[in-house]
Every structure is written in structure tokens, then in C-alpha cells.
Image (cartoon, rainbow, N blue to C red; front, side, top):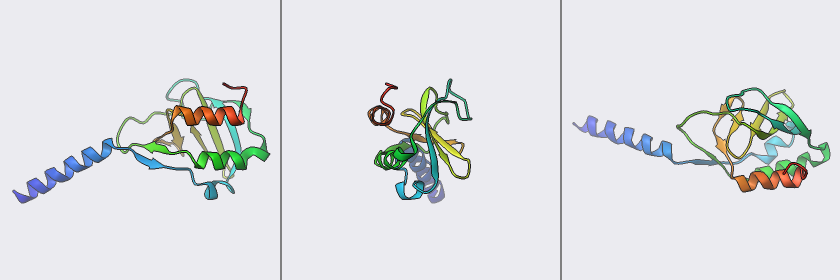
Length: 135
């Protein structure tokens, strides 16, 4: 009976924890030497796993500032839930090794795995500051 209660408690705890977001940040010091390009891309419809059509590229002199501002944004990550990929207008960070991360305020695909969401206000702030003609 004790095993049943312990197992039931564990299952309920995991279920409840899966509903609560975990907060995450992009690490500025790790990204500064790895990110070579920041773009605004159109991901089109939900479900597109590859990088979408490039609409604009950030000037190389602004990448450092962009990454610093990005590292200040709190992203939410959920343990359980449907995996979706960003759709519509999104940011794309391209790394030296050719991998990339695509994100917007709804979804993010980090190395092919999606889990992150930032607020609409923070997303629009980045767009307005670095790509003022997009909004």
C-alpha cells in the first residue's frame, strides 16, 4: 500500500509540475562569440521546421546590443504540451556552426526543439528598437 501511495504522489507531482512554466534566459556571454547573424524571417504557417524567408538582416554592429537586450527577456518553458514551431514574423539567430534558433512571442525552436515563449510586449520592443520599419 505504501508503494501505491508513493507512486501516486509521484505521478500527481509530475503532472502538476508539468503545468507550471520554467523560466529561461538566453545567456549573453555564451551567445556573443557564437552568433554571427540576426535576421527577421517569415516562418509562414505553423509546422515549418526550417528557417523561413529572410525579410531583413540586422547590421553586424548592432548584434552585440541585440543579444544583450535579448538576454534580459524572461522566456517561459513548459515541460509538457504540444510542440509547435514559430509561425509568422520571427527572429532568427544564426550561429558559427551553422545552427540557428528561431523565436517570436508565441513559440521558439531551439536546435529543433520548441519550448520557449516571451511576452508580446518584449517581442515588439525588440522589433521596434532594431527593425523600426517592421511594426
